[in-house]
Length: 151
Length: 437
Image (cartoon, each protein chain N blue to C red):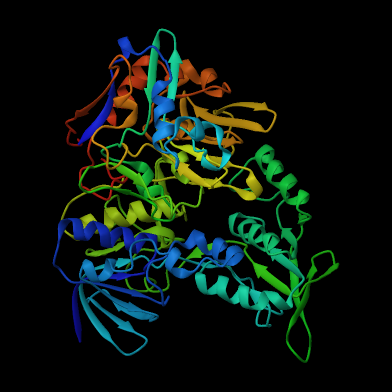
């Protein structure tokens, strides 16, 4: 499957990936409205990790063996069989946060307002995730990865 | 006589985990699912949502409604298995059907514990573990202003949360000195208690209910009597003092049963070709290093998956589960997993309380054996993962307590390894979950 990978040495922690993630997951898709209008507000589905000298934008790794899926109490989380992406079907999510306890990366966020877990969906339907597309110095790349067999 | 390759008794997380795993390996072998519940597999934790916001069954289903048909699964719902014969490989159903099976899974779940006392047959006395329980409570509720909930555990507090949202007065009677005592420590338990008190829930601890009181002629519940003799009037009483494994089908058949049905790491019972999982079983707990009852949904599903793979001939071992709970009452988020309190002095406990945020981590020789996060819970999974994968965090344990703790707070060697590990596929391809050896 394809995953978003980070070329750490060239990541400056500029937060543009966060901005475009939030924009792409907003209902308005308008840069001003997505951040100003409360009714449109969502959260970025990634976070910038900065521990000098390492900068890193961290999101769901779409683990080959995703513990969030079997932890999900409602069946909201499942793997897209075509793309391999781990998807939270938000209409089934009740915000019980069990997936947050299961995620080894801390990559799932709480949308407390709407009682939904928010996670990277690799911008379903787009050729390239918005974070990768708008990374100014190609620190984020979207590449085919090889998953390895378990021992 | 009906013949089936796989007979699954139980249609909740465990049974469903098995069905999905079997179909990963064996696309055509006949699977028969029998359940005493009349519904397609639904998310049991959503019965609270059913009670407080009348969430319909079609919005509680675990998978799409056509799942069974699409995957060629025969269901016999609303029917109870009365007896299994482990020599003849048969099961007798209460409608007279006899089923001959090749592989059997006992995913029978748990049942609420109801102590023998007066009044448990009266109208207005309920349990709260199934959708039918929630429906029955919902239908009775218009007659009721005051409810007594016996037991302040997860189920007791969940039903209280739903009832408060329905506008009734609730009194919780808890036998121990604090609510949620098996899930939370004193600190985190007190946070939930203050939320309950804020919502005018009365919480009585250190007391038991000795009698359910009911009207002599109408046999309608009108309150309870406590062990100190005091009485509380209530139009409804809900008992939530715990669940016990439903093991009656296994008892006397040669299948080894302790408190739950004993299984090995492949989820097989002591009798070949018969498997068990979920709340009915005692499966491996990776924190305690031993078989235990951990009656929670994620472990039932994961254990069911392992059972399913092995039943279908794909040898897979269960990595084990442990207690893991996330609660969200009245806007307060708390996660907890593994041990809640250290069993002896050889464990180290580190904690940090900062306003409404609270973290506690229990360690043994640098390895995590338990955690509680309250308030900001988003990084609790990082600690849970380190516990599950037995990563020594001695050198960075203080960093894990920091308010801004995140994945990159871990030592570089650890976080790099954990990113790499996310590329490791499970031995048997489940729907993503928890089956790597």
